[in-house]
Each structure stands twice: as structure tokens, then as C-alpha cells.
Amino acid sequence: MTRYERLPEPYETGHYPDDEIDLRELFATLWSGKWIIILITVLFAAGGVAYALYKPDIYQANALLAPADGDSGGRLGGQLGSLASLAGVNIGSDSSSKTSIAKEVLQSRVFLTDFIHLHELEVPLMATKAWNSRQNQWVYDQEIYNPETGEWGTNQVGESLQPTNWDLVKKFKQSHLSVSENQDNGMVTVSIKSLSPVAAKQWTEWLVKDINEHMRAQDIEEAEASISYLETKLNETNIAGMQQVFYQLIESETRTVMLANAQREYVFKTVDPAVVPQEKSEPKRALIAIIATMLGGMLGVFTVFVRAFIRPPVGRIEQSEIRHPKHDRTTQATTTNTQ
Image 1 (cartoon, one colour):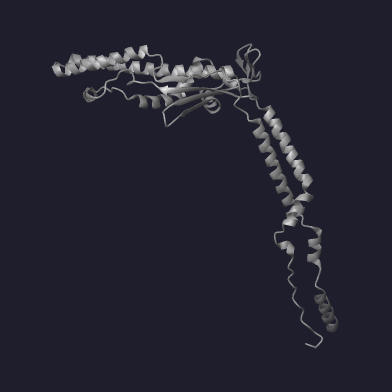
Image 2: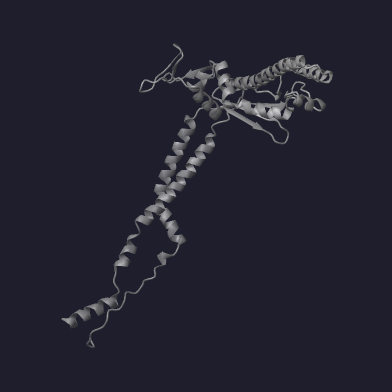
């Protein structure tokens, strides 16, 4: 190696202030992409407003219910409970458990299917798109249901659009019915949402009435079956003590039937009845517009940062391509001496 030959010096690692987070550069990036942010925000805001205006008004009617007092129609408890168990008779449960059962029955598939068919709610549930408040009547979707002929439409493959019981119950539970219970006082609130304020109030009243009737009929049927069973057992025994027990149980079941027929509000007593709502509950149009605008702004900022990351400033690219002057001179001298 001659004295003129020198080993090439390694590249000097440059330290650029751009490698650190610079608030000034961040603001400069946002300012350079301000029109992108504004454009995306305006588009999202306009879309949010259009969507909010497109959504129809939804009205909600509420009924506040309290558990009915008493022992569910006069079923025996206490000292006759053990005797009834020995006789194979279920004397029933208290009012709190009956209320819990009634609340679950109210949301059951069997009860709701019967309720929908009883009050002919198939068309209002599945084939309406609006409510005409001036004429107080439904606006039907002609592609789904023809109100003049009473026939359901067909889809593209020729299948009927008439809903099944599964479809009816699913739509009713997801879009209309809401049942909640206050754990502090046991009050139950039944709510119905609908495009029609009149229908919301009417359906709520029907639900409360039908659940009371359903539970009343169920208890009467059970009591009558118990009476028939007890009378059979009474005729089979000659023991005076057991005959006395059977007479008391038959009396109790008979009283259950009498009180059930006499009580109009059997399980739930209406504390605050449903009324026709005067104000819509949905949609929250102002909230929808604000959320859409915020999402547009965040997406715009994100787009600007991604764009700046993918396309770095030209000055940074030029700096990274400039060689060190000292390295250039050393390389040139080494090449000359070698030659």
C-alpha cells in the first residue's frame, strides 16, 4: 500500500432533526393538507345530515306496571302447603315469582306469535314504510304488500315475501318491544317503538292486557286440573283426616278460579298507562350529524398523515442522496493512484 493510497472512510451517519417528533412539522403537515381535511369533513357532514334526514321518526310509548298484590289468586300456603305437597298438588308460588314468570312469558316466542296473529300485526310489522299522520293510516311498501288485493309480493326468484312466525317475532323483539325491571322497587316498564304514535300506544295496551289474560287463563286451567285431581283422590280415600285436607285444598283451588275471574289486572297493575307520544324518540339527528362530522375530521387528519408518510418531503430525499465531500476526494485519489 503506497502512501498515496488511503482506505475509504466510512460514511458518516447523518443525524437529522426530522427523525424526532417536531410539533412545528406536524402543524406544517396538517396545514399543507388542510383542503383534504376540509373536503373529507364536509363530505362526511353532508352524508351524516342526509342520513339523519332520511331516517323516519320513531315514537315510543311506555307503560309502568306494578306486581299485583296478593298470593296469586288465593293459593294456599303455610300449614296447608306441606299437606298439599303430600297430596301431589302444587299450590303455586308467590306474587314476585309469578311476576318474573310473566315478564319472561311476555318476551317468549309462543306468546308473541299468538299476540301478533291475534291483533293482525303482520302487515304493520313487515310491509309499512311510514305513517300518514294526517289520515292516521299506514303507508305501505307496494313491493312487499299490496293493500288493495291483500297479497304479498315476491322476490327476484319468485318466492313469496310473506313473513314466517320466526321473522315476525324477530322483527317485533328487535325493533319494537322493550321490557325492563327496576330492581329497587320491582316496577316493570313495557315500551313499544313504532313509526306510528297511535300504534305505539295501542300495542302497549294490548300487550299489558294480553299478558294478564294469558296468566289468568293459565292459572285457571291449572286450578281446574287440581280440583279434578283432588276430587278423584277424595273419592279414593276413607280416612277422615285426609278427606278434610282434600276438602280444604279443593276450596282453595275453587277460590283461585273465582278470584282469577274477578281480577281484571291479574299479574300486572298499571301504575302509569301508555299514552300517544307527542315527541319522537328517534333518530337523534343532531347527534348523528355531529358524530359524522367528527369522523370525517379524524379521517381527514389520518389521510394527511398517511400521505405525508408515503410521500416524504423532496428536501429529505435530496439530502440523503448527497455524498460526503471528504469521501469523494479520497475515493478520487485512490482511483488515480491505482491507475
